[in-house]
Length: 221
Image (cartoon, helix red, strand yellow):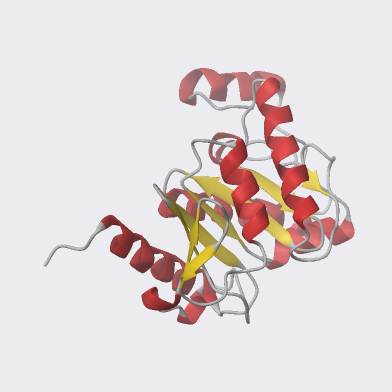
């Protein structure tokens, strides 16, 4: 029997959650994952461990934000919906409290529009600019408002983004598939690890080197 698109998405959310948990990108009940449907959204339940999700317990939420089935939707729902509203290409959102990303905000980011400098080609090619969203309590709807503003501001500059960093909480990334979003998250966390572990800190790639990445790989930096 063939699975429906929704059934496949439910299983993929669980697969990605388990992978992130087993590799230490999430811990305990921190983090959440959602995916866009034609008539609403799937999102992980509140206080659920991403390593032990079950497809049937994922929350189904309508386009109006009202829950229709499953466990109680994550308190990050407002943030996820704001990202979907601001970026029509976003098919899914992953938010984690990954260690090196949170550590970066505690020790000091590079700048408010670029939490990390362009120190590796794959960071430039696969991640791009990542703005900082100032701290607000978990679940505060204002966080979504500021994330949407960052998406629109960076798009207006000609450098669309696929991630923002919530101060003291962790990154939120989005993409056209959960596999692609997870890859962005991994590259972001590993770049933060490199930056924090290098002493002295490395110089960013030069403008000429970044131009070469733009020309060869259509890097949006």
